[in-house]
Length: 119
Ligand SMILES: [Cu+2]
Image 1 (cartoon, rainbow, N blue to C red):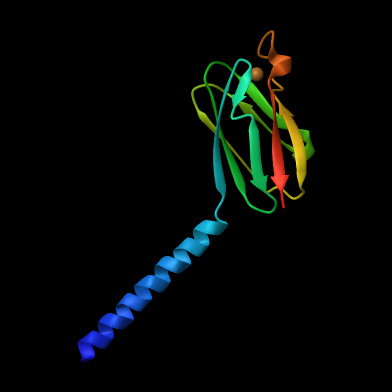
Image 2 (image 1 turned 60 degrees about the vertical axis):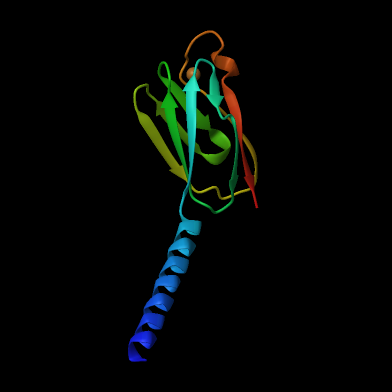
């Protein structure tokens, strides 16, 4: 009888542990992988939630690009051959354009996208 009680408590603890780990995961940052190449980001239309931490993981498939989103006050160089991580917490809702701000050739001007921050 006693061992059954202990087993019940052990199982209950285990379930509570799983539930709390999931609660933490919900608050964790959202990772979005973005590739950059002449003259496109993929994806180039990103939706995130206000107040939820976001990590943009950029990989350039060809040369040095840039990422600048003035409306959200974030920018980074995107050098080739490595992953560049850019973390931010969106503090306002809206649609914010971004663009490549390292000249990467004819067509560079069209290298753009948007980040939409929802409530
Ligand atoms: Cu570029």
